[in-house]
Image (cartoon, rainbow, N blue to C red; front, side, top):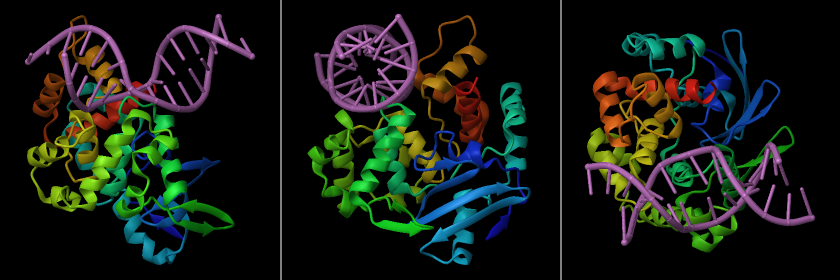
Length: 279
DNA sequence: TTCTGCCCTTGGCA
DNA sequence: ATGCCAAGGGCAG
């Protein structure tokens, strides 16, 4: 099945740029799991071509459009952030890099796993978690597993997570799983909350500081102003915006970005991250 | 408020 | 083969 995308779009940069963690590449094909569906897709001249199971492919079209945030008008986003020459240069270099609308629960676990962890290792952690506790789905003779529900993952316990090589992040993931299961942390509720309030709620969790909270907010909770300052964004800001001086602390950089880029700071963040990391 | 040192695992390179 | 080091944030002192 094919979907036409009347929007700037770079599938590879969007899927394997570091924001999502379960996409595997095989030539120009990308395979992953989206809300319980095993999907294989590739970019075509005017959109994407894909196959999927178990849901009917026609039923997945709205889901895929939602995942790639085709409801965001990327040209309008560019108009808002390209007043800045650095960001404009990155947009020029990587047109069509989009921010994904990920599943909040999976995104939360992924970024708790991301603390002081390399991107490759985070991919391994999530694949191990899915293989150990998710349900199998089959497509073209290949098998992947769904990301486990909170009820499935809580069974792992702290030790089960350590066995999956999560290291010192294991108790953090277990505790936040319990919170979601008990609904003392309600992710759907955070979508409706203002940015500052949702951020505060996330940061009450052990293992979630400003950076990880901002990632979850930006990639899954509808907060396009969230500006995660990780090591790459910090380097980009220090070199490009504060050259020859001692770079400000991360909280100050975050506030600076919010004042400077405004409500689409998250998109500017993603282009700076991508550009500096691949530089 | 800000700075240090510790937490775990993997993979690349002496 | 063996060991060293970098990649990656959060948090307590």
